[in-house]
Length: 203
Image 1 (cartoon, rainbow, N blue to C red):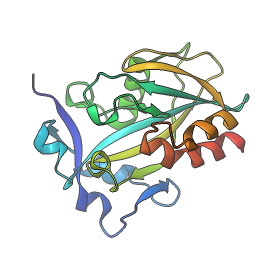
Image 2: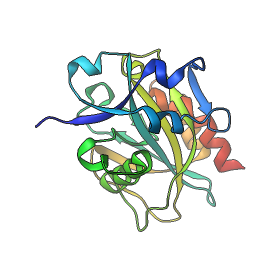
Image 3: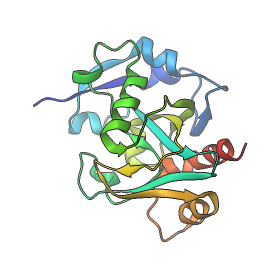
Image 4: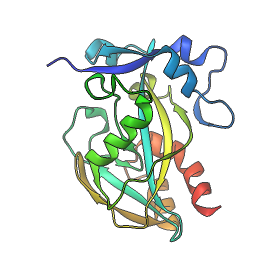
């Protein structure tokens, strides 16, 4: 079955405001650009290796702000994106699909909520708060993906479901130790966005 995902032409997305790494949402809000310029294209090898199009990826961190903890998980050795298998990650998310989000007025937020419900079990699913964006042209997978970074808060337990081999809450110091460990295989987007997530938890 053909799977079509939401993409935006790179030159339309960035215009004259290119960045590498993390961009806070109060510095530049790319949401309007995405929502006014997106299209759906078949997800295939050609698209996965074409940096002229950015695949928009919701990426939601789950935190317990009151207890100062963050949910981190290890990706399973299965799933569509082989370049991320078996890596530690802080972001729950995935592609925005035409078959589920085509008629949505806000496909980004609707995809965030769908991915949360598919990938983790929570008592409730609070609406995520958008905090920024990630562009990482330093890796092959990063060159074709653009991250919309958000945080959702939960005081309840969170259990991993799809595409996760394990997952649990970590204290800030435990997360710092894991994410900075040179021997741990940490997802690049997790390393890039963790300082901003950490600041959100502490403030």
